[in-house]
Picture 1 (cartoon, helix red, strand yellow):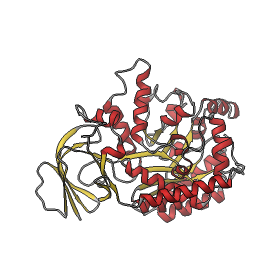
Picture 2: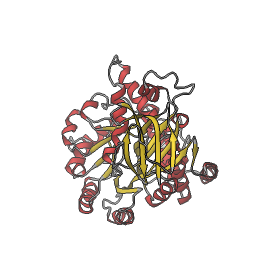
Picture 3: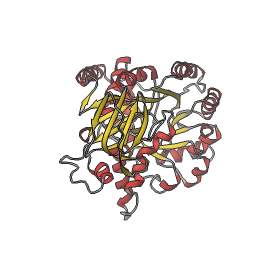
Picture 4: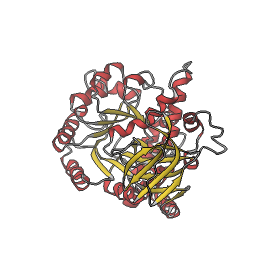
Length: 427
């Protein structure tokens, strides 16, 4: 299958804009140049449109899309302990599958072509992602309540074995956090990650109180130091949030550590400004979404927009520039194994086509400004290609979104009918 995109303007991973045609052969970019004349099975006129790499969302709990709006206007402690985790304790496979599928569908509609997930029952998330046609890096969540995670590791290792060669699924290990996983469990997980050659995805330093409690419980050590001592930063690592990282923690990180930032969650749950903005130039940052139970949407443009505005808010209007934010948006691809994020020969054909000739984004003086500060991705992104296949074309998704919505709504009714259970974990 050959697809030829003609007469478009490419915005590359660095935010540079140039005119080019794009030839896709099967799942790969075959040529990016002006005036490609080769014949194709499908030719798309992109005159007046902007073609970008697809977006990567680096921290998600996709099944939580089923809880969108269930816990509002509560303090973060109550959000976890009295609302989310009690409902989550009664989750069934159907809730996980349809929540994940709803999330994957929303991601594609918003131009996300790959995402990193952190949840249990990873095989259901993988099934949903493959059916939608989106790429997923899935970390199987591990708690190790008993102080040993051997049984959980066996389940996670089977999941990794089942999907290690899948072109759409990249598995890794998902220790929940240094406040729920003991140092011994963190060491057990990092040793296994090294043994089988995978990375980890973990929540670290989400709140100021977590840092304080870590120092009290671990002889003055921060959550990042606890992770480093137990091998978490010896392997490729996605840090969920890391909002309250301290300057002394930066030396513990390796070059394969990336922070997935989700400022909408921090604002909504009153988690404070933390230090991400203070040390932004010293950290590998990428866009995340967290779960829809807190962020209420799967939209990395919204997250990046908020990140920029928070950074500018305190008399720093010249900082957090358009190009810096664009690179942050694109940065996640470097830490995933999908060969994506670059529109060039030999890379996976994953891209978005923007039509900025709309009420929300017109006129266009600077396409980066139009996209980052004005665009509505579900509207302005008219086409999404993943692995050389259209999953959104001329504004229409390639799957039955009504069926997904219907099933998700039915799950939501059943969740309310079952009510809350008793959570095994405490925030």
